[in-house]
Image 1 (cartoon, rainbow, N blue to C red):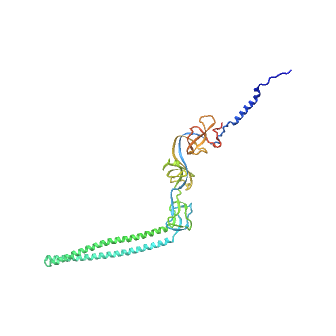
Image 2: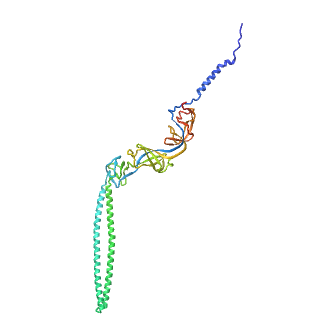
Length: 414
């Protein structure tokens, strides 16, 4: 006898297929689900965001320079016949650096000596002539004084005789007239001697002035001749030599440069954004091979070159012996203080005055998650980078490479 069985339910036939599709979809979804990468605190730069007051410094690079410099120039056209010092040599004011030669200058000195000697002889002869003229005039005055005395005696004699009635009055009048005439002539001669002395003084002064001019010309030529031996003129170091042996140099041409060794200053390149925040006298801390040295700004230029402004730093007169011109230094220029500002310790890849994509881990949370955010950074001061906007105190900032970590969140070590 045949037994008829009922056909299986339709849903049972499709159940394995449905379950298979569900499992496949789950696996695909699991594979496609983004996985948050895990960062290691020991290998990834991170820093806690701090909030408070921050002392601001502008960091700059620079070099030490001589505070005193002297440019040696040629006082007269000449030829370099000897180089007595080489760059780097330590010099005193009397140290000879170069020896120059100018044969024409020697002839000029000899000619000037002859002119001085000639003028001295002419002055002596002129003085003797003046003395003779003065003596002659004085002799004439003496002669006239004698005639006046004789006329006065004759007048008194006639006056006495006239009073006694012995001599005629006409003779008395004649004697009186001769006396008056002689007295007038004597006064004229005396006036002439005064004028002669004044004239002689003026002429003698002119002759002496001419002699002085010749002597000054001679002294100048002798000085130029002495300066053919070029000396340092100061304590310092020969920094630069601008001529070669046998070279002809013109008057005023630069020969060498001398700079002080112990009295130094610093030339720094200040960020142009900080130039308007400092003034002459602002404190500067220099990091040198001999340690930290404090100075102050003494000059700030107004011209911006490649984003920097040149500035000079005045240093103490007494400095360590290890310091020399041309040594590199790092400067920290005090700019003031920012109140209530967010900042972090500078991390690799983060630059001042730029916007960067970083990851921030929220403050006061046990979740090991950091979320991507763009932050605007401000100035870098003493190793701390100011956050102008986008963060608050207490957060932890992670700065992985944006190209390798494009995800919106990361795992910080859960």
